[in-house]
Length: 176
Image (tube, rainbow, N blue to C red; front, side, top):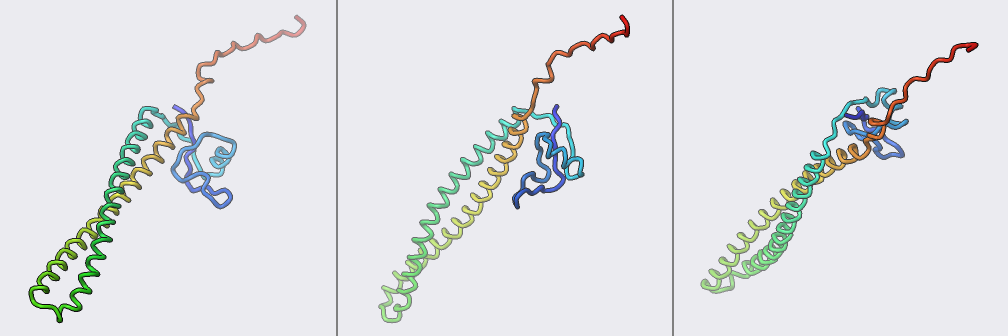
């Protein structure tokens, strides 16, 4: 176990957050000053390197899934743009449909139906992109949590835990 400082507020320096609320930081002169001011508190934390690595691995996997979904969304977005262009073309064709024979009108209606199906693909692409964005945010949050735990683990100082302790010096007697 080690003692870390957890902040009760966001602590700003030069207009940016230096210490975020509910995050753990190593003990420094500045963080201990914040503890004395009631802006943070000392807590005992057991840092499990394995858990931090597990979270980092999970974050990497989530990021890979997010990238894959983003690529799929990009392909669907391209299809959506093509569908919109087709829908625009179909709309123009329908504008002159009054002058076209009945059999040509049936062809235009089929094109419009395809455009509607493509527009549905656009809607699905947008929903897929939103899901990919949510996955990317979740991956980023997991990565930040893993990095915070990893940073806390890397700042642990075990060197003093196993240092030999010198016996107390014998008291000198006056005049001896």
